[in-house]
Image (cartoon, rainbow, N blue to C red; front, side, top):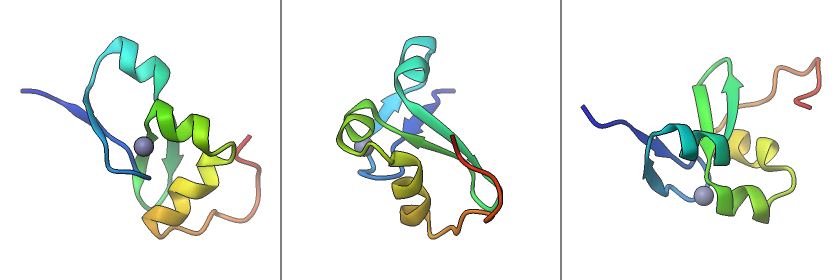
Length: 67
Ligand SMILES: [Zn+2]
């Protein structure tokens, strides 16, 4: 059973693994579960957390910073 990480911004897919997990950004969004962002999008968007949440159509919970 192959698992793939899917970028929430550009839709790129990569086989899941320890290495790729370390490179990919990960964000827990209450409404959408785990959102992931590929290394390229992480580099391109300094605020990728906001970008991927927007892409997923989620509004951040309001309180609390995403760090
Ligand atoms: Zn991407």
